[in-house]
Every structure is written in structure tokens, then in C-alpha cells.
Image (cartoon, rainbow, N blue to C red; front, side, top):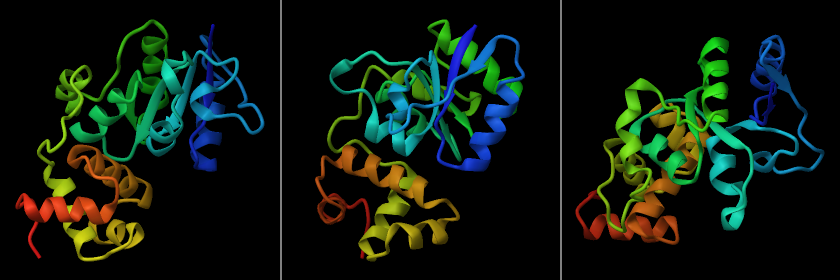
Length: 198
């Protein structure tokens, strides 16, 4: 039996996953410890977690925790590479069916890596993290341009039709690729390198 913890932020998504996964004969849904950190969920073999939480709270210093499957809205190469680079074992879209999620849980519990078919090229970057100044994806450039315009994350999400959490993920990727400490520094670097124009 594989012990799985569901640590996504959305209560409705979490409740639905816990209910459906609890009906699978090979899985046992375990509750998160009160005040516990999602990526290091006690007693779990596999944890399902949002990308924002995984990137922020992953086990420090190589500490061994449960295998993590990160759920994202739109699993493009950049998001998948970011999750795998942070040590996740799998990435799935929020809309994945229970059969797909169950199969992914069993796969990562067996030591495999699971990514959507549309983003499999991101596997290659797992052992090669982006170097400072790596080229930005088209979406990351769009986000950077809106940062340069002074828009907050919520407004950027509204403009691009994505959630505020997804915007935060893109911003984190931009800061990492440009080796910038702040949003303002990322904008300045982007302007210098011709990645965006005012």
C-alpha cells in the first residue's frame, strides 16, 4: 500500500482528491500533520502539492522526504523544469483524472519520474539547472514586460488569464534565470539585455 498526502491549497480540489484516491485499493490517504510542512508530510510516501508551496517549502539541505507530485494549471516546459529542478518526482495538471493521478503516484513511489506528454523535453533540464541569464520563454517575457509596467501579480494574472499563484511561479523562474534578487532588478536586467522594451 502506498501512503499519499494531499497538500494542495484548494479545499475543493483537496477534498475531491482525498475522496477519490481513498477509493483506490493500492492507496491509503493520510492526513497532514497539524502545522506540518507539506513537502515533508509525516507518514506519507507520496505528497501532492502546489508548485508555489513546493518551491518555497521543499526539504532543505537534501533532507529526504516523500516523493512529490506537483500540480500546476498549465504544465509547460518552464514550470515542469522548475519543479523537477527543485526535486519533485512528478508534475501533473490540476485537471488530471483520478486514474492518471493514481498511476503517477504508483510510478513515483517506484522511483520513476512522471511528467505530462506535452512537457517531456523538460526532463533534460533536470540535471542541468538554468544558468544566470538563460533565455526566457515567451510567457516569461510577457510576465517580465508586465512587471516592467508596474503591474502586481493579481493584475498580471488577470491580463494573461492565469492564476496569481501561477504568476508567482513565473516571477520566481524569471528571478532565477536572470540571477536577480528583486522584481525591479529583473526588469533592469531584462531591459539591459533587450528581453523587454518600455
